[in-house]
Every structure is written in C-alpha cells, then in structure tokens.
Length: 233
Image (cartoon, helix red, strand yellow):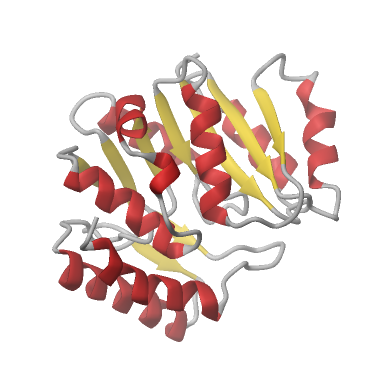
C-alpha cells in the first residue's frame, strides 16, 4: 500500500468508473483518491458505488463547490501524507493520461528520481487529437516557462506526475499560490529549487473523448504571469 493516484473531478460521470477500473486493474496495488468538487452530475455517487467492490482501494474526498485544480491536489497531497503512501501520483480522469504509463513513472521515481513527469515534449512524447492552436499555446507556454525560470523541464505544465513522499513533505504546501496550469509549474519549480531530482518520461497525450474540458483563458493568464512571480520564491 505505497502508491496513491490522486484524480480531481468535476462532472466526470462519463469517465470516472472506466478510469478507476483501469487503474485498479494494473499490477502494483495502486490505490485511488478521487477529489470531487461537488460535481452536480453525480460523479461522487458513482465513486461511492464502487468502493465496496474494491475493498479499501478507492477513497473519496468530497468538497463543496468548484475550488480549483491546485487546491484539489493540495487537499489530496495532505490526505496522502497523513497516511502511509510513499509514491503519490497526479492524473486526469479523462484518459488523456494513459493509466498504463503509471508503472513507467513509478519505475523511474522508485529508482533514480524524486519527481517524474509524464512529458509530452521530451524525446518520444507526443500529443494526439489536439487542434494546432492548442498545441501552439501549450508548447509556447513550455518554452516561455523554461526561459523565465531556467527550470530544466520540457513539459512544466504537465499534470501526469509521480512524487516521492519526501518531496511533498518538504514543499510548504500551504504556501503554494496558484490553482490552474501555474500550479503545475509551481510544484515542479519548488521541487527543483529545493534540490530534488526531476526526470521526464515520454508519454502520448490524447485529448479527452468524453466530458468537457476545464481549460479557460483565466488559467492561461495565471500561468503567463505566475512564472514571473515564482522567481521570487
């Protein structure tokens, strides 16, 4: 019982049972924590209906209202640190991250790195089914972040990650500022500044087939301005 996959959800009824069953079918005894922000579509109810079937491997943290991706992960990290999990993963609910890649991230994190990023933009990584403008914004943002922060990560906004417990214990989680893509950058930046080793594993990122994207202009702006603020951390 040393691996926990944190999956934040808001209106993911089309995907949640499928992603849970896929993760729990993998070798490696993964546990799952769903952090649900009061989904009106009944996502949390679907999770509760599966809990008895998987005997303690599915956990549910319900929050009132849509409070943001970053705060969902912070709540999940704190929950994990209060328990015995050594490797803590971030992953989306919509199959844009292939659950099969969890074992690849774990293999690197458990041997040679402290943080492992499932990367679209390292050698061998790629993006499938995104429009050209979305790819342009994402790749441009990655290059912009590296230029401003000097952080040696090719995919700083990636949300498919494995952390060692000691990393999350060391980062002052209550001081993490951002909630959207800037949150993903900030967590990697803080880990890097604290001297932890970050590695990247190439993945194929696929755009969601079901449900609705949570991307917004405000999230992009937060990331653009946020990287400048991070240099003062």
